[in-house]
Image 1 (cartoon, one colour):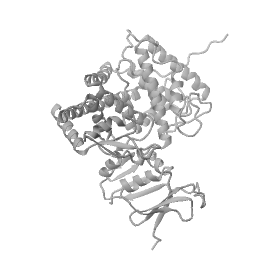
Image 2: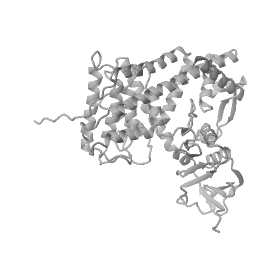
Image 3: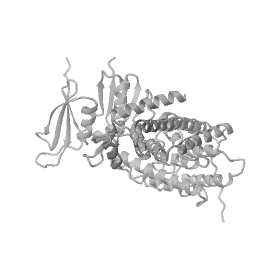
Image 4: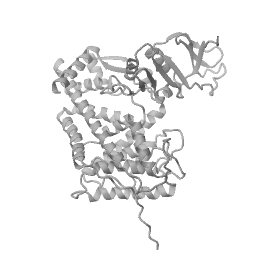
Length: 380
Length: 130
């Protein structure tokens, strides 16, 4: 009989309790604000936020970034290749899994957020739709040595056998976190644990491809214990600051040439994730406030709109245009002269190049824009 | 005097999207369209500011030789624009293109965007006149 030595992992860093409290408050205030909205409107805001975050998670560049003021509601990306669509579909499937898992945990129908198979399931979902055309073995650990894509890294990833052991230790550690924390002094460490999970998972790099997407979905799962909705804002900000994200990981990994849990320090990266998350929560708050104001303006200027009508008008205001499903909702608004139909541009069409698209009439869009600006100025 | 560049020809994966990007959004004029005389392809010629930009989209009529699948190797297109870069970037982004603003006078399209149009990902760079 042999005994195995426990595999050591980097330490989970501590975050200031005030920062953690601020983080929980910021995110749950958004959930409260959404709960105060008509559900038909809140659903659109949540879906918009979710779809925007999935564009970021899938690695599709935002519609605009860089040295420019970013709009509060960036346009939904068009000009997507089949490869891009596959990545998006995979990320959405991964998010669905995370959200179901969070719900089941809250309803005490499963014991913990993360099971040993969870990283494999998430990886299979994000890589399943054949996102590269290359063999990436969805849900299977890598069997070859690999290197970081990041050029500035001098850290060598663990070999496949070591990576397999480390991943097992990683999931065991997270399971331990998930069961020992309630009512203990470790309460409130979700943010640190979730950020540490990204850091450690990427240092192990257990899969051929899709490690980043899988790691960030693990973050959403692990950060959710005290949040009433997944921390999608962190994913958005992390995507916008991708250079900072890569540099922070490279800086932390480059202190050692090989896996060395004593040298791999997640502290700086974890604090950066906290910053992104708070920034993301603030942007989400601004979106919720603006969408609520747009809904109020639409309600005031057009008598007789149902709550569903208002929800769809605000959705068009956020999205700019809409193609495909739910055309019936827009046909009804078009009949009232509030929405106009136009041929869907090729960049947004999939298959059916004769599809109709819908957008607000310019006068209504201008009215909503002005009303939202006025509301935001008054509330500031 | 060095030779003057008159025309570029490029094989595109999605002609409709290419025309949306180059004609509808960037404003190049379409000056000719029709079957390519020698290859099994639809051909559209644009006036790209004194340079003819010809777009080939392979078809499958079988009455002419097929377009060489290895034909497209263009890696970069650089455009000078009088439109302020923030305005151009905002307009392209509103249409859903991925735009990265490098500086107040320079921007480029994301590789995802150009790949969705051309099938491969040439850089498309926009600069204001210095």
